[in-house]
Image: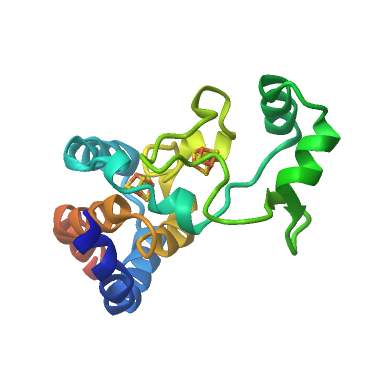
Length: 172
Ligand code: SF4
Ligand code: SF4
């Protein structure tokens, strides 16, 4: 996994323009079954992707913490919400609550999350490739190819699988 992670920024950078063009076409000509296709690929890729051998999302990016997340996690940690905020969070440029520091303070050396059962919704949903209306997350998905090896593979698989369909619709 480490070898894959080391290569990922370079691989994602090489594919960035191709991916942007691909998703531009896909946005204009979204197949009705796109979510089904992406979710199937997502499941396939996560069958061989071991998040516990990776942890790159938790190590390199911060999730957004909603008020509900903060309430739930603070309760779990048995501290006041304002204490949780002052200890771990800060506002980003869009005024969202994010981690003060990365890697995330709740990430263990073994890549287990100390607060897994109450983790932020954004962590639960990451990398968002099994969410509904996938096409609305195209830009985020391209960005996530730089962080998540599974997303990189999912996008590569998607391009192979929907290549003909997208091409055909373009010419019509
Ligand atoms: S809360 Fe847990 S899942 Fe979320 S970034 Fe931190 S370690 Fe990762
Ligand atoms: S979601 Fe992606 S980046 Fe995060 S641990 Fe799993 S494979 Fe790694």
